[in-house]
Length: 106
Image 1 (cartoon, rainbow, N blue to C red):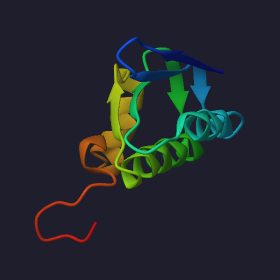
Image 2 (image 1 turned 120 degrees about the vertical axis):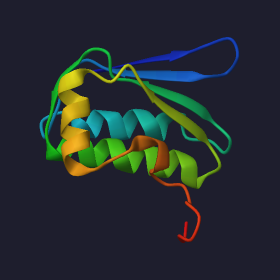
Image 3 (image 1 turned 30 degrees about the vertical axis):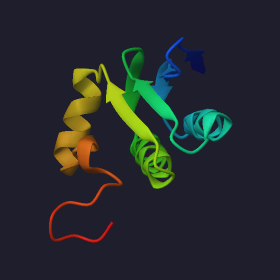
Image 4 (image 1 turned 90 degrees about the horizontal axis):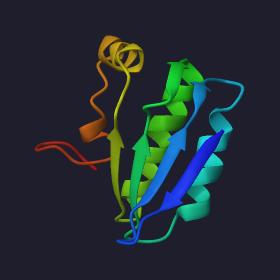
């Protein structure tokens, strides 16, 4: 399940609840597509995510890349330790997903 909230300043918060895994990762993709407009500002708040698998991580990465590809801003916030440890194990730094680093193509 994904809770969606639009704040008065236009920021959209997407809050997955429970496991972000093969059984429900598509819900995050649908939520992102529902709010996708150029220059959208999105917060993906993971506070209520209990666990994540490879499909959930892939969906999260695709969502971040997609939002940034249309000149949107995205922040992944309140990442639980269990999720962060998986990202760290894979060498994933969400701050740089879908952005260009010096010397790299976008």
